[in-house]
Amino acid sequence: MGEMLNYSTMEQKLQQILHSRCRPVAIAFAAAPPEGVAKFEGSEPSSCSYWRLAAEGRTFYTVSRDHQNCPIGGYTHNLLQPETMPQLDQTLILMSQIGYIRMEEIPGVFQLKESPQAVVYAPLGETPVPPSVVLALGTAGRVMMLAEAATRAGAMSSLPLLGRPTCMALPAALANGAVTSAGCIGNRVYTGLGEDELYVTLRGSDLERIAAEIDTILSANEALTAYHEERRQALRR
View (cartoon, rainbow, N blue to C red):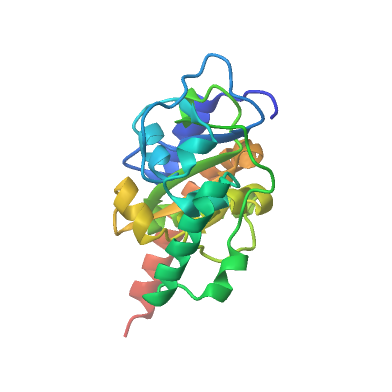
């Protein structure tokens, strides 16, 4: 997956721009369970629930069976087991019947190209392996600036603001570069994401280049704030 960066410094840079209430999460799609990392024990209702645990400070890995409670998450992670397929169909039919989705939208949902043997979760600064993607949250104005840093680094995807399902942001970012996501109601219930918060997901291999642009973007926005405030005063009638 590449050599290890100073991920503690990377986390500090992201928090410098995001001012997030919780830590950014490193997620690695691994070909084998990593040595020295605890396997997740217990049960969570969704794949995105693991984001919450890592943001709170836990480091662990999951395997395929840990992703079967939410068939949507199982699908986007390419970990859906045959016995869960009927549940996926039932969930999609329900969502279609209540007007949440149209069935023709389903082929457009991003999915990991390969099935990982393990998914490693950790707070970014403590990740035991280089992350495939880094997931962070913040208010719209802060996510705006991180997206600007990713754009300046040449690491922003051309995808629009993503929506449901939130978990498709992970394979979308891995394949295309940084993405922003408005989330979905299931994710907000399972993770406690606030109504005023959005996600940004960065490709792990782009992280260092994005972090290097953060100071420039912060100072540029500070300068532009003063510029636009002066113009607003001067041009207001």
